[in-house]
Length: 295
Image (tube, rainbow, N blue to C red; front, side, top):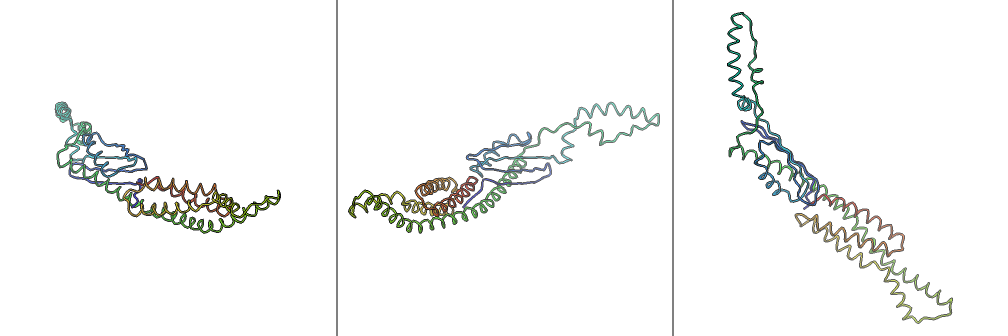
């Protein structure tokens, strides 16, 4: 099963005291790297949130954002500066009485007054209920991103299997060509040796001749490489089907496949085989790009 390192998660909830929104997104990384931006109101929960995130995601560069908005009623009750309110009362009430005597209205709105008496809210009550509510919201965002990563992983798996099938077909063509190519090399080299020997009036018995031809032909033999390619492709397919996190294993197999196909390219002097080698490497490069983003 393939799981992508790219994903996005969102959770938004509210209770009687506040509303909370958590956004989490991830990109590929060889290690677990978490960057957190959250209000200082809940800074005491950061270690717990970090551990929870790491339990869900073993690798990836993860960015976590959290916004908290205090409900207006709670906010107003908690943000009024009581000292300022007392000073206001002691100052305005005598003035109001004085203006009443002159029939002049102060026309002071209670909302305007209270807005001048608000102070910044520094914390919320992190009782057990609110603490659990906040942590559950983060968990919901993490679970949402797990689903997103799995969904993206399915798309990547489909692309990998398509390209894997493509290079598998190319390898089958190489195997068929190798059989014909070996005979062609044998006959061509036999003719060349006989031409050279005739130029110098030399003779070579058949046993020695065939031995020299066999040594030469072996230099162009790609049967071992195509056999190993078939084995690596089968292992590749098995890891995708059976492993939970096949990324590192199939990345290693990609390196081995590149090694084998490069060897075939260096051995061959057949134009058709050389063309197939280029096509194989193109498909393999697409696979290598895709597996950089999976677990």
